[in-house]
Image (cartoon, rainbow, N blue to C red):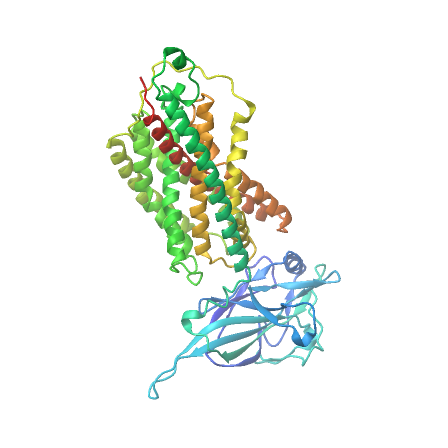
Length: 572
C-alpha cells in the first residue's frame, strides 16, 4: 500500500490524498488514479505551467516499495560497430523516473506507470507456506493522451495496444485534462534477499575508480619519495653543520631555521580561536575516519536510508570529548588561561556556523513546501543533542586536556621577539595556499567527481572502500606538503608558522571551491534562485569542513616536525 497526492481543482488548496493498494503477486492491468466517476483530472493554468517547468528542468520522481527505490531500466549497446545481432546490451538502472520529456518544443507528461515488481520465493519444506520477498522495483513510464485511455466507473481502464497512441501533451498556457493511470506486473526472480541491492549499485565506472586510485597512489608515493629524500638529506646536512663545534666566526655566519629557535614556539595571536578550530578539526577527523571505515565494512548501506547522516551526526556529537581534549591541551601549551571560555568556543564556533547555515537554507526549503526539508522537531532534536551531548563532552575533554601536562617544546622562547626579514614573493600566504593545495586535490579529484554526482545528479554512492583509500592518501599528502611548507618558511627566518601553516595546509579546500563552481556551471542546469542557493550553501559547508580537516592534519604534522628538528640540534 502507498499514498499518492492528486492535484486539486483549486490551486490554493493542498492536494488530496488517495491510497494505492498493491497486493503481493496480484496483477493489475490498468487502474485510474486521482479521478472520480471516470472523469479526467483537470490541471489549471498555474498547475500546467508548474508541471511544464519541472519537466523542462529534468525533474525526477522517486517512489519506494518495501524500502526499495524505484528504478528505470536503461539498455545501452556496448559495441557500437558491427551488426545489430552481435550487439550486446549493457543494462543499467536510473534512480527514479523522469516526470516527462520534451520533443520539438512540445512538453509531454508521463501519466501512466507500469510497475514491475520482482519477487524471490524462499525454498521451504512442503508443509510450510512459501514466503515471498520483493527484490527489485522497476517502472516503465509512458505518456498516453486522454483520448486513448478508456476508463469505467470502477476506476479500471483500458490502454491502447502497441505504439498507436500519441503522448499526453502539456500546454502551459491553458488548462489540460488527462488521466493518471498505473499497472502492476509481478515476476519471479532468482535474486536473493541479501543481494537485492546489487542491481541498484551496479556501476560501469569501477575501472575509472581503480585508475583513479592507482594514479593517486603512484603520484603521491613518487612525490613523497622525492620530498622525503630532499628534506631528509637537507635536514641531515643542516643538523650536522649546526652541531659542529667550530670557531666563533662560523657561528656568527649561521643562517636558516636554527636562528629562529628562540621564537619558533612563541604563542601566536588568538590562541583560543586557533585551538578551538583545531579541536573541531580533530572532532571531524575522528568522525569521518570512523564513518568511512564502518561504511567500507558494509554497515552503512544505501538500503538503510538516512543511516549515513544519522551515524555521522551522532559520532560528531560523541567525538566532542576528543576534540575538547586536543583543544584544551594545545590551549595550555599556547599559554592560555581561560579554559572555560576556550571550551565554550570549541563547542560552539564550528557547530554554530554549520547549524546557522543549515537552518537558513532549511527555511528557504520550507518556503517551497519541499519534501526534502528537515522537519522542525528534527531541528530541535539536533539542537538538544548539541547542547545536551556535544557541549558537556567538549567541556569534559577540555578540562582533562587543560589539566594534562602541555606539549614539551625542546627549546625555550626568548623574551624579545626577533625581527623578521623581508620575505620573497613566493612566501606570500596566498601563493602558499595555491602551492600546497595542488597535491592533495589532485589525489582526490576523480573521487570528488563521483561524490558530487551522487549528491547532485541522482546517483548512488557506495564504493566506500575506494573512499577510505583516498582518505588515507589525503592524510599522507597533506602531512607531507605541510612539512615542506613549514620548512621553507623557517628557512626564510619567519617563525610565525602557527596560523600560516593551518591556513596553507587547508589550501586544497580552495581548489574544491573552484571545482564546485566549475561543476555548477558545466555539469548542472540549475537556473532558479533557491536551488542555486542550496547548492552554494551546502558547498560552503563542505569547503569549510574540508578546510578544517586538512588544516588540522597539516598543522599537527608540521608541529611534530618542528619539535623533532629543534630537538636534534644543540642550542646554547
